[in-house]
Amino acid sequence: MYKNYFKRLLDIVAAIVGLIILSPIIIFLIIVLSISFKGNPFFLHPRPGKNSVIFKVLKFKSMNDKTDENGVLLPHNMRVTKTGDFIRKLSLDELPQLINVLKGDMSLIGPRPLEVRYLPLYNDFQKQRHNVKPGISGWAQVNGRNAVSWDEKFAMDVWYVKNISLKTDLKIVILTIKKVLLRKDVNASESLNMAPFLGNK
Image 1 (spheres, rainbow, N blue to C red):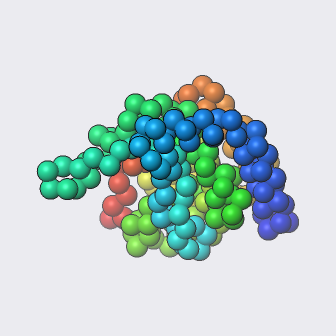
Image 2: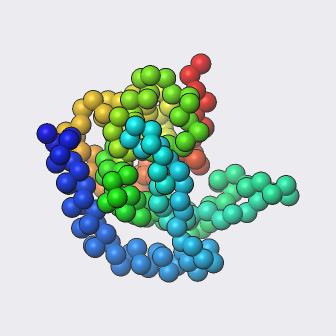
């Protein structure tokens, strides 16, 4: 009952309330990042959602578009600006994803949406992470994030898929808030701090 009906209702209510309460911060960041990046403060990136359907995740921009002499974008960690690093540490770059939640692309809680390039690399067990909508935060994010291996991360994602409940979601929300306030192990982006997933050997 919760998984099929109430979870979506709570997502909508929470996203609307969150956008209203956080609107001063969101507006401020839009202005600051528009100046910092000389234009668009947002970053859109294709990610697989429920049933591996591709959608565009919305985040505040934290990296510039600098390239090497061949016109190839520099590595992620070389393009993160000081402002971008600051908003990442406070997870502020994730705030626009409340719009993804409102649209129905994402849920507040669920497996984090990874890169599209990983889709062909999943085995049958790992593919189960796409049986539900991806989330802004998830079980793996409050249990080590990049301090755990990919196998452990996928195991936690699938555990969540099989154990979705209001109690579990509330626990993840509380732990996420706690980690944000303590600035501990939060928003340590996979693209910056974790080796890419290379498939199963």
